[in-house]
Image (cartoon, rainbow, N blue to C red):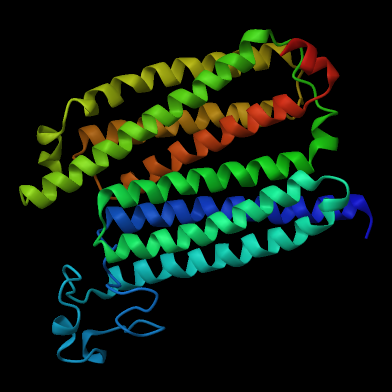
Length: 325
């Protein structure tokens, strides 16, 4: 197999895997927003079955007693199958990660870092699976849910980095035009801002768990009245993220000619931030509708991924870029 074919096949499976991870993040958000996290009270089976039931009549009459200590085990077919499909998608990603690792083996001869990154990702996905089991066993302990999400960020970063390394010959031929040295430094700050914003969002989500558990407040429209001050910081901080990233996009557009491939992720970044802010406003003003929560979470993850790709692309771009950035 020629090197070009090896690289193309790896990039293809790498991009498919990254897409699948983002899909899993979306589904995970749906699981949490819909309260389906305990739809399957045990792990890796679901109510002791490889394939969950479709009605309560298929479960033993004493199933509540069997799962004492697992939280609310009342059977809900929608929640059960939502959580089950989330698990199936997780298994599918495990297979994709394994395929990515296999596709990376030939890189040991000419780009060993691609193989080592793929191997590290494979190990991390195994840890993520174990961490997911701990989340279920802890009855959705907020700190473990947050850790689960952080590991997902690391997995995405490693996948994007490995794809960029594999695509380095193509990236080295790209140009970021006449960008000033401040652009790449500002991009690093923008990534840091995004991570800070996501961290605050995670703390707000943990506050929601505390409110619903301690005060037995299930009405979403009144959650906002009980939020800590970090909610208001999180809301205001979005303006800093907006203007910082718009500056990055504007500068890149000015420094490149029409048709430059690097404009596409830059424009995508601007669009993702717009959707994230609109979804955030909807959560704030419309009483935290469950359907918007997964969208808001997915946008945050996509923003980070796009920023990270632009950072790596600017690092691996041609000689002209390295002199300017």
